[in-house]
Image 1 (cartoon, one colour):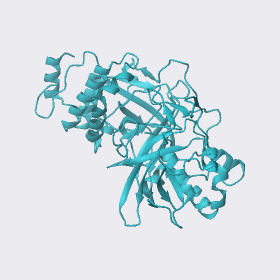
Image 2 (cartoon, helix red, strand yellow; image 1 turned 30 degrees about the horizontal axis):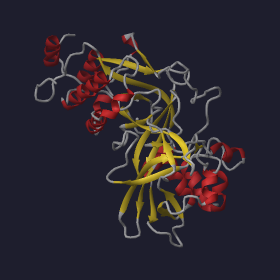
Image 3 (tube, rainbow, N blue to C red; image 1 turned 90 degrees about the vertical axis):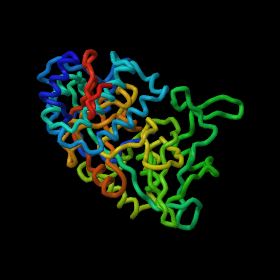
Image 4 (tube, rainbow, N blue to C red; image 1 turned 90 degrees about the horizontal axis):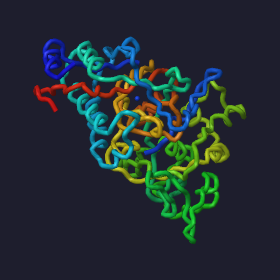
Length: 406
């Protein structure tokens, strides 16, 4: 549809978005019973991307329901636009046939569309008319994606070690070496050579990071939860709450501790969840190390101001930020999470990366801050579909709320 015709179309119909049905961090440590034969972490062949363009209009989702709930969506889009305005974002495009310019224009047009405050039906019509829809190939090349959740915990802590606060979170050490793309290369030795950085157990048993403590917590499993979630709010003895965020990790792959807990009879597949694990380790603090050492990945932190940030170094938005594998999914882009959760997701922005989120068949939804968010994240485990929207090459412009084009 050409721009002139689209203006008439806008006057007649207008436009609307729909929601139906989402720093490097890892997903909430909960994995209910998996269906036999499902491998959600199945890797794609080298060089293959996670998205496939939908060419049959009948396979494009109906966005109408999602368009009736656009709270905080414009804010989340703005954060993606900020990222896309940074020169560093250009090195991650083109994504397949999607150029950086087209990705940026897609977000700009979607931001204007959301601002129009149209009816859900109107917005759905425009999304289907003006945008191309891509679907994730999922874990099975049929579009199956496993949705899980993550959150920002709030824990008591202290800047100094005390009898109560004895378990540290660490700053990134100076000998940690990163590549140009941010990948962890290892540990730089005195002779300048770089070797694999020590694992979690080696780091903690050796005490090699003494002097790099950022903050101290009262519970060893709370430390592990922060490592898994990648950020936290720390309530200091004065009552002041400070934010810490992800800085780096030691370069090891994330490994869930759930399998060992289940194998040793601590939990069943059906009853393992974050709250149950927290309760268990509060009652058995002497067992924490034996289990968490099963995960060799170790995370380092830094002080943050404001809200927790994702891997794009932009604030994450509850129920509007998703985390995916950024080696196969497009950064900062507008997505539609077609999944039936207790709290509907719908439209979201791909603004974060998960240590355990590796493969086309995984998507992590940011649930927010505090215990309630943690409870919701801890029970989020559901299959769905994942779609991305990009402006058509000849899509034209969408007028903003003042009737202006781009």
